[in-house]
Amino acid sequence: MTSQETRATWSSREHTQPMQSTGSMYTRHHSTLSTPRHTGTQPRNSYMPTRSTPHQTSTHYPRKRTEAKRYVIEDFRQAFERKGMDLDTTRKLGRGKYSKVYKAVDKNNNRLVAVKAIDVLELTSDVKNKFLPREISCWRKLKNQFLVGLHAQYEAQNMIFLTMEYGSQGDLLRYVQDKGGIQERKAGLFMSQLMRGLQYMHSKQIAHRDIKLENIILFDNCVKLSDFGFVRQVEQNTMSLTFCGSKSYSAPELLRGIGYNPFLSDVWSLGVVGFVMVTNRMPFDEKKPNNVIVELQRTRQYVIPQTVHLTVSCISSFEAMMTFDAKERPSSNECLALPWIIPHIEMVDRRSG
Ligand SMILES: Nc1ncnc2c1ncn2[C@@H]1O[C@H](COP(=O)(O)OP(=O)(O)OP(=O)(O)O)[C@@H](O)[C@H]1O
Ligand SMILES: [Mg+2]
Image (tube, helix red, strand yellow):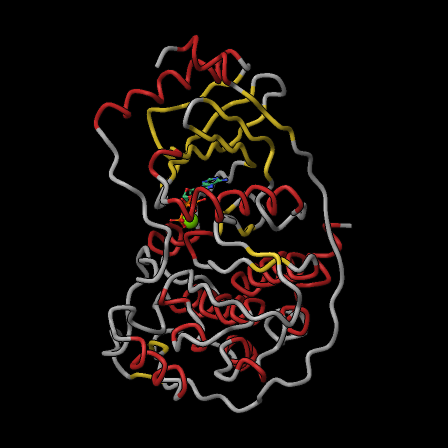
C-alpha cells in the first residue's frame, strides 16, 4: 500500500470533550468484615497482578498478524504527518488483543494524544461487526473527566485509528507492578474518580463490561476508565448474555454463565480493582475452573497480606462492591456513599465543577 492510497481513502470525524452528574445514599452495605488475614508475607492464596486473559467464550481474539503488514504503520505515520500529527511508531504505549496504542503530538494545537491503531483484517467478524462499531458509537457519547476522551476517528485502507487523550503515566496495572500496592487514601481517591466515571456511564445506560487495571489510565492528577471495546447500551433491567471481560475480575453471575445485569457486574469488577490497588494481589486465581472461583467468591476466600494495613472503611467498601448476590450489590450510584469513597467525592466533584 502506498502513502498516496492512504491519503485517498482517509476519512475522519472529530469529537469534543466535557461531562457529568450526581449520586445518592447507599444503605445496603454490610458492616461485618469477612476478608481473612494471612500471617505470611506471601500468602498461599494470593496472586500477583498480571495482564489478564479473556474468557474462553470471548469472541475478542485477533487473527494472526502477517509479516508484510508490519510495515504498513510507516505509511500511516506519513499520513498522520500530513494531518499535522507526529506519530511515534518507535515505541508502543501499550497493546491489546487487537490493537496497538502509540503516542503522537498534534502539532495543530501542540497536544499529546494517544492513537489506538486497529487492523480491521485481524478482527473476528463479531468484533468487526458488533463490538468495534459499539465501541466507537458509545465512546463518542461519553464525555466525562474520568473517562478517557475520544478525539477523532480516522480510517484508511483496513486500518482504523482512534485518537484519544494521552495518559502520561501509563496504565494502572503497570503502575502497581512497578510501585507495589497503593496507599489506601490515594487508592480511595482513585476509586472515587473511577466510580464517578462509571456512574456517569451507567446514567447513560452504558455498561463497560471490561473493567480491569490495564484498562485504567493514569493522568497527571487523576485516573480514567478506558478501553470501551465491550461496552453495551442497555435498559437498566435488561440482562446480558455475552460473557466478556477477564475471569479474575468477573462477577460470580458471569462465571456461572447465567444472564447478568452488566451494571452490577461492573461494580463487582471495580471492587476487584480496589482490592488489587491496595493489596498488590489478585483476589482470585483465574487459572482455577469457574465453579471453584465462584465458591471462593461466595465464601469470600481472598487474602489480604498481613503486611498490608487497611481500615474497616476500605475493606468494607470493596467487600460491598464484591457482594456475591447481585441483587444485594450496591449500584454505582449507591457506591458513591461507601465509606472509602465518600470522603473524596466532594473534592472530585469540586474539580469537575
Ligand atoms: N490514552 C492512553 N494513554 C496512555 N496509554 C494508553 C492509552 N490508551 C491505552 N493505552 C495503553 O494501551 C493498552 C491497550 O489499550 P486498550 O486497552 O484500549 O486496547 P485493547 O486492544 O482494547 O485492549 P484489551 O482488549 O486487551 O483490553 C492499555 O492497557 C494501556 O497500557
Ligand atoms: Mg484493554
